[in-house]
Image 1 (cartoon, one colour):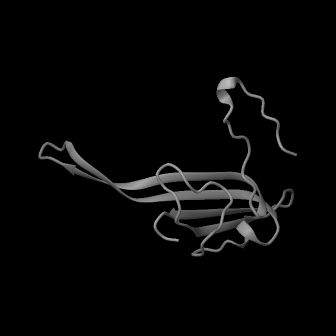
Image 2 (cartoon, helix red, strand yellow; image 1 turned 180 degrees about the vertical axis):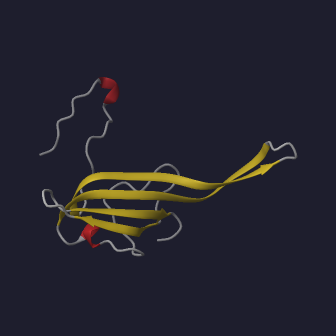
Amino acid sequence: MAATVISASGATSTVFGCTAETGILIQSFSRNVQREKAEVVDNDGDVVAVSYYKPTASITIEGVINGTTGVLAAAPGVVLSLNSTTSGSGITGGGVYVNSTTRNETAEGFATFSVDATQYPLIS
């Protein structure tokens, strides 16, 4: 059942919950956008120029196993198709490639699955 969000007039665009993904009942999704940085210093050691390059986004998805396709079929080195947001903060488009997957099972809990991936905006 969808949650009912009650908010003040200034908070009408708040987001509650996660976007549904195939293969898992998603518990968390994070996307961290970063760029590498090169600095030039003068003879006093002060930074006089900086360049930001090679934009990427690190993506982590965690959830309870609920099928055999979608996120659950992820494998290292393979492109991953997501319903969750993969645009914003200067990176739009490209491909999301899986770095690693982890399956966790316990005696007194639900089996979980997590994916660590990298989004490359110029590779699709």
